[in-house]
Amino acid sequence: MQGAELKALRKTAGMSQAEFAEAIGMSRETIGLMERDQEPIARRTALAARWIAAHPDHVEHGRA
Image 1 (cartoon, rainbow, N blue to C red):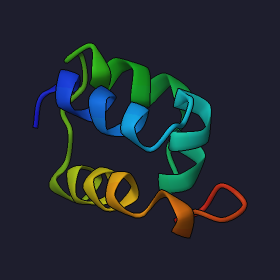
Image 2 (cartoon, one colour):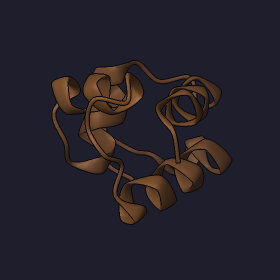
Image 3 (cartoon, rainbow, N blue to C red):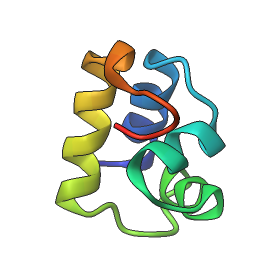
């Protein structure tokens, strides 16, 4: 997964970087680096991003 796809999935879920980061247990800074392709995106992060984008209503209190 590339950073642009991660960003698109986050936006599809209607989340800010901070909200998305909290939902998957990362820092907002790390999400920003990944979206700019300055940090690799682990497979589990890509899977979590796809799940959150498909099921944003299941994200409760910032955790998926």
